Each structure stands twice: as C-alpha cells, then as structure tokens.
Length: 384
Image (tube, rainbow, N blue to C red; front, side, top):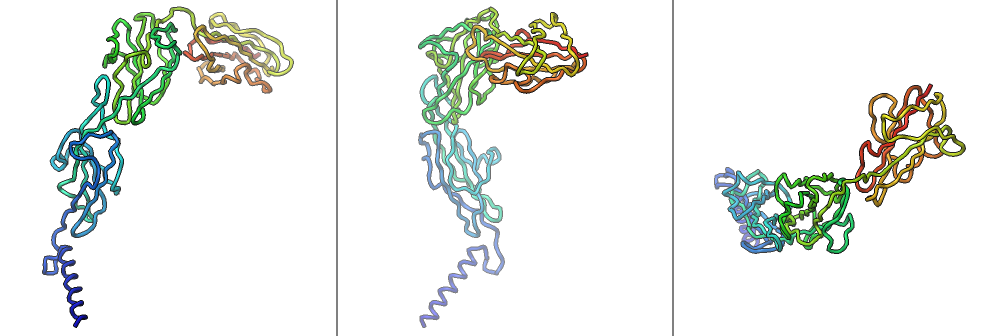
C-alpha cells in the first residue's frame, strides 16, 4: 500500500513538470514563456556611491533555461523596457561585474557626479528575451584627477619661466579614487589668461591637443603672443576632467626668448678607418650653399667624426642622426643614438667611397626640440 501511494506521488509530479514545460494538457507544447530577470545586489535606487559599481544579477525561465543576458547603461533615470530600441545592448554570460561608471559633471573643485541606469534582461535557450528588464538608477561620484608639470623644473611657487620657442615639457597625473587614463595640453597668449583658478577656454583658439596617454609634448611658440600660458589636464576612468588651474602645478607661463638657442653640430671627413691611423680631409658647413665636394678615389676607406654643443637651454643631448644621399632623393634619417654618435660608421667598421657625389647630413636633437637645417651639418664626397 505504501508502494502504491509513493508511485502516485511520482506520477503526479511528472505530470506537473510536463505541464509546466508548456504542455496544454492535450500533449501539444504551448508557446515559449519569456524568462524573468532580477538584480541580486548592487547600488540601491536613488543612492549615491563611488564611480566603481559592483552589480550581480540572475535570470529564471519557467519552461527552459537562461542562456545569456543583455546589459546596457544609460545616463539619467529611465525605465529600460521603454527605451529598448535606444539602448546599446551587449550580450554576456556573466552574472556579476564591476563597472567604471561615468561621473563627469564636475564643479571647479570637489567631487564630480552623474546619474546612471544599469539595465539587464535574461535570454532563454529559445532566444526569448525578458520584455521587462531589471534596472537600477543611482548617482556615481568621483574625485577630480590632478596634474603636475615636472619638467622644465621651476622653483617652488614659480609661475613664470624663460624658455626657447621650441618647448618640450613633461607631466604626471594622479587620481585619489581611481586612475588617470588620458591627458591633453593647451597653450594660449597670457593676455587672455582667464584668471586664477579658472580653466582655459574650451575652444579651438586655446590650441588644445587631442587626448593622449603621452606624458610629454613638444610645442612651438612664437614671440608674437608671448608670454604664453601652458596648461595640462587629466581625465580619470570615470570620465572626470580636471578643471581647476589654481597654483602652479598644472600650468606655467612661458616668456619666449627670441635668440639663437639651437644646439650646434659639426662633422669631419677622414681618409682611413674609424679606429687607427686616419687623415683629415675637411669639415662640414652648416650652410648647404657653402659646401663643396671633397674629391676621393672610389673604394677609399672613409670615416666621419661628429662633434656637437648643446644649446643654451638644453640639459640633455637626446641623440644624433645621419642621412646619406647619393641618389638625389632624400632618404630616411637613421638614429645613431646618444652613445654611438661620434663616428660613422661606428669604430671598427669601414665606409667605402662610392662613384659620384655622396652627401652626409648629421643633425642633433636636444631635450627641447629637433631643429631643422639650422643645426644640420653637411659634408659632400665626390668619388672618382
């Protein structure tokens, strides 16, 4: 008797299971039922929290199984089902993630904010999608990033600095509650400086660069418009952009010096190898029109030795480069590097004179700029 009762219970359970899977009682499967979605944990509706939001979600399907989820973000407070065609849905099999949420409405100082809505909808094994996605709206906050110009060096609190019109400067960024992801720099005539603590103008006249991950830039400043205001901005991973320019950390004023500040370079040609005995033939001119070819025999072993002086503003000679042109078509500069810039070819190697005229160009780059022909040494060799 107990055995029969147990069997009846099993049979009843089986019938219920079949019916719940879409059987309408006649043995024919009914229409697929869409899944349902629930946000398990994360920010509360209307709450305020940091830009990094950890959210978990789940889905249930009464007549099948949940295969994936669609997730989307939207600015402002919305009902996700009403904006289905507007939202950009991404499909995932994850049920939890930590998101860096946009928080880029920023006052001049303080904490940035933005209201965001997270939407999620389950997708079942037959492709049916929850028509009423789960969602949560909350305000994300982030602390503004900060930037500091670290080169050229200035005395503590010093705003003005005298520099050449070709300016290389470097910076670093910090963010208390996240990380800096991009930078940009701008320059504007000082007479249009908007005032202490105010950001530079947000227009093309302020000469903003594109956003970049670089932490160094070289710009050219004319004496016209001098002095110049130079600014650097940081953007963090919540999209917040530095807006306060008080003090001297993220901006400086440059008085352009109208004088010859380029580094100089000379190159001399020798008959013989770059190591051992060699004979001086001639040295270069910085003026191409004054250069005359040095006659050598085809097949002669030659060596070119360079010397240089840094310009008055430079702290470091970055590198020296050379170019050999015997075809009448300009070639590509070859970087000889800082530590191998005395001889071409390097000591222990040889250069063999070719037929016709070969021109050797040598130029240097300091830590401000790579100048053009004004600091290019030229020497011409005629092989015959």
